[in-house]
Length: 525
Ligand code: DHE
Image (cartoon, rainbow, N blue to C red; front, side, top):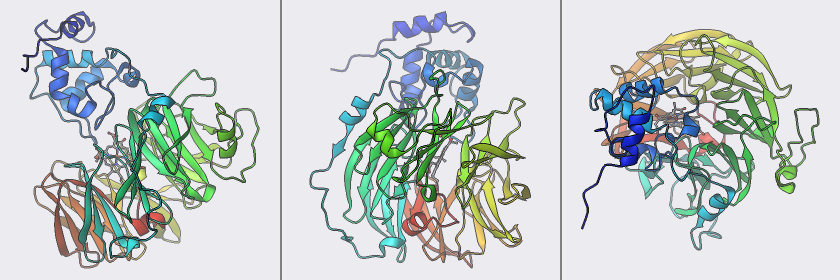
């Protein structure tokens, strides 16, 4: 028999005792409210899932007043809805107080937990080294369907689904491929990494790298997988079969300040992982080049992967010190520079900074309006130089930046703030969405890469239309109707006419194997 749920007396008492968060009445059961409205996305233990962890450790930089505002109004550029119309001010006060209370027992995720979480599919090793399906393996699309947490594999020539399988809950970030395109690694917000064999249609292994993870990167040689975590504040390094090799504390060298890890990316030409820290003004580089020379100069340590593995506890990190932390960044083609967005300017002005990874210094700063989503930017040749074009999470504009002079060359207006941008070497046009705009979320804007002017738009009236990816040859652009009963829409990339439509459940992202492994300039890396 199911017993009726009694109010949690500890929660009631805590709410009554919290200062600075209003004077909630004893009638509000914060724990029950959390279970009802928040646990599905933030986890029953508040350790994060689809949404971030809501623990005192992860909320250090969020003032209680800001927490109340977020609960009331929701948060731009995230899935966090507004509760102002559903909950009373008293209930919102109670919830805002509750999330700053320690969870007991405190959640931890040590190396032993990571190792113990690993699962392997029996007999998944040693399967044939060729696809069991008939289609061009290089023109395969991996489509992440966030609505019902599935992944579809799509033949990019016939636009037919080859296979569909259940994924971990709330995958986030682009899946990462091995250089031959056979294996793909998915990362979920609650820390799971899944290695999947695309040719044999099977999960190979899974491991939980952390409690709240940002993304994963796969080394250009296919030998290493690195996971970036918010909780615990660590990077976790795995071999290609997801056996933990080492974890790195995301902290300053003196160990006094620890940071959430914003993201890790592979810098294949440098044979290294490059890491952005959310809370400390440092960019990290960890080499996997077996021939890398040791570097010794005070703050910099030998960063050879071999050394890092051979000496347990050895940091093995090459640090670039900055004035402000980098939030999101983009490499230039040489991978010598990163262009990063800075959120933390004291006067609130967002800027971008350019960091030279070789000399380990900031070399330029440029003002950019709003909040550029640099990770979703693309590069292309324009006016005798190469430019980076990036959508903007806060403004209806595309920022175009000259990658030689690091100066903005144009701001292209769009109908509203957007998340993603895509093009292809063989296409004259770049496609971008306005999915953050309540009025223009149904519109994709097509920009002529020669004139830097918007030339056309496609619409899905009343629905959200977002995230584009081109076929291997650039002839077709695939966009998502980003709804639970959504669809993948195939557009002719020259006439902009719809060619085919496949029903899908909120297809949040789609990734073409060839464009990814060849590092096409029109897609994210
Ligand atoms: Fe993302 C990629 C950060 C919210 C869908 N997002 C990324 C990456 C970063 C990032 C750093 C690159 C990682 C990679 O590919 O390896 N995202 C953030 C945020 O900081 C932000 C704004 C807040 C957050 O809650 O984390 C955020 N992202 C979202 C969403 O709300 C989106 C729209 C829906 C969702 O599923 O969570 C979303 N992010 C995506 C997608 C990619 C992504 C689909 C991969 C894009 C690509 O094509 O490569």
